Image (cartoon, rainbow over all chains, first blue to last red; front, side, top):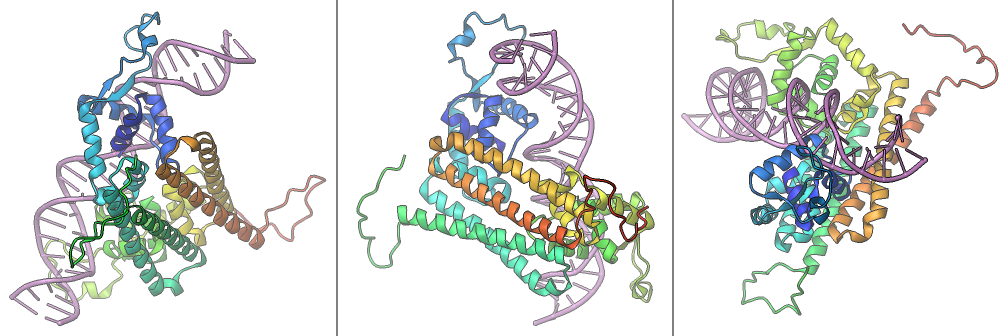
Length: 202
Length: 202
DNA sequence: TTCGTCATGTAATGGGTTACATGATTAC
DNA sequence: GTAATCATGTAACCCATTACATGACGAA
């Protein structure tokens, strides 16, 4: 979770903890916020795991700076080769761990680096998860509507509309993805017709 | 959190754990789900705290039922007097603990039993929390929009629209509340006109 | 010189989840 | 008689939060 987000951000450029948190906010928006209390220990853990290392690239840090009593100043982290590999692995995962509520936003935020086929599978996974939830709410709502008071009903309906809205959003995203790169259509008769051009999408 | 939800549901009628969880789903809808792994320990804890007790009201349980080896069968809980008091206290709370993401839904679900003035304060608290968040997202979005890729942008905008939507919803709810019971208008000139009657609020 | 914000970190705690273990009851 | 679902419970763990402590640096 935090781990993926950190890998993703450091994959773009080296950062120190404080900066990382700002970026986290800017990247994840309303979806998730992390406190320093979880960020710093995570950085430590990830460094211990060998995914991160301290970046000595900043010349001015080395220069005439104050004697650095013990250890106080920016600590800039960057990804190691193992870290990049780990990021790649996490990006390739298309399972519940990529489409549940808490995680989907983070995976989505790094779709730019994600394989198109994986993107579609995650979007579909998320959508079917939400459709499931929607049906659950709809059916219990149908059963209990008459027994609910004004407020409980409002809550159910607002919740239901939120889910419906997200489903529509996902449907559009999926369609866009498909238009951009149609699935490798395993046609029952013969190989698929050659597509006009396979554009490189960086 | 779970505590409030349990108090609220048992306030309506005695229930056993399993039933309680179904009701929880029906009441909270998309907002929150709890697992048995947190429900049962919570029931235990609340019983120990004296807010709940086992309900012996079910005649058929006492009847010819199997010898009950040790302890196995439905355990129906109901609120004690202390439990009702506790529920009242929690309902009267109008602070961050009632309008943050994780909690608001639960508080809202029991608005039917909540004092109208408290309802409005909670709705306003929630709204200003969301407005704050919306402004945060808007401003970082304004600063960073050009640097964001397609997906990150999508995520930001979908998130922003979700927040805007909830703000509108809250605004409507607040207006409805105000129409139903206008605030005790403190007029700037002179003492307020004598209200018909000052009802005893202990 | 003091305030705000940048910057790093730890300890205690919290509030849940997953996975597992068990057994009763009901419907086929 | 067996599968589904009703029903209760525990233990291990997870992933974060809050509150706190510390300190550098720039602007007023």
